Image (spheres, rainbow, N blue to C red):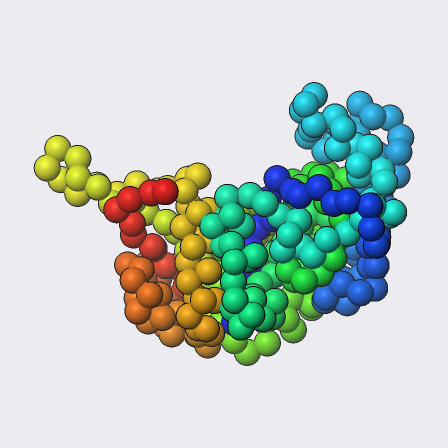
Length: 266
């Protein structure tokens, strides 16, 4: 099982410590691509601050992120599972997993990133600010850049098992499963069902979508579940108390589409 996650804008602050070792990150086929993006980002942020802030889409309140990016080569690094701190990762609660569940998370979870391409939760990285939507000189749009870099690496990482794709649209642009991989990939939409004027209505959940997905992955990990196919995933989530509806089965061109139906959002 390979679970594809988006990163979070919110990130922990690393203290001074052992810096990044690019050659030590998972998916070594991405090392050259990571080095090129890192070099381009550091060069940008060591130049004109206003230009860097505009390219990175940073508000005035995030001006300090430019200087942090400029110091990435020597900044202290943390496991990626500790760096990302957003809603999905809070709900996932990696720090609260027992040893067996955490070991499953280490081999199953893959976090996509505008800077690193994709990393596993045990990979040590410094906190950074660079989204997949950035057009980074001279590399251009990072979504397109990583799509080229990941074309061979990600199918190898997916191997023959299930791919559970929980990425947001911007990060999904960096790699689109195709062929046999697409047929065993499942995407998930979270819907809230509630009664309105005596009728049941459904609406797409936005903010709480991330929390639901984080809890869903946490429950799979805690239960030691490693479904090998989208069909097995549907069964496993059902046993864990989730209401799952299959909207479309996968083909060589399109992933399975699953709806998680909830009545409460939190």
